[in-house]
Image (cartoon, rainbow, N blue to C red; front, top):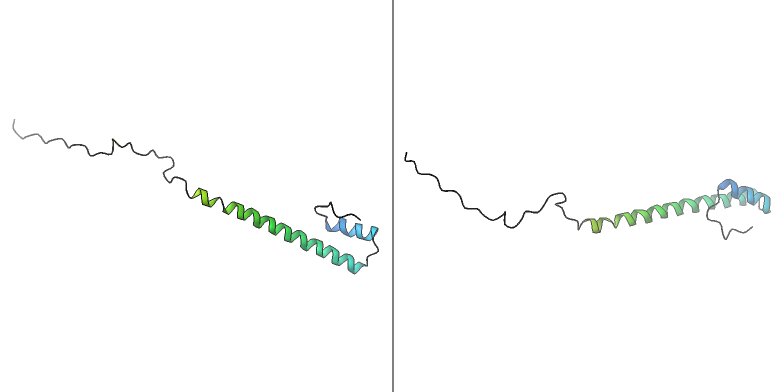
Amino acid sequence: MNLDNVNFVSNDNLRTALEEQTDATPAQIDAAVEVNEDTRLRTLRFGLLFLAAVSATAIIPAGRLRTTAGRRSPHPETTKARPRPRPRSGGV
């Protein structure tokens, strides 16, 4: 039985293959199925942890984004102080 090129094997397929192609005892088959299940779960957890770490690294460049998104920055000339108009004198 060649397991070198197999990515994942379901518990039922592993159990069937071990029963038909080996002389393993039922206790050995149960142990092999349990190891297979534990390994698949550990690999799934590692994959999810890796994806979470990659997603978390997106926070670093996102922190450098402008916080004024959607607003135009004021033009330098419009922000200068304008002279106030003089009040008119009260004579008729």
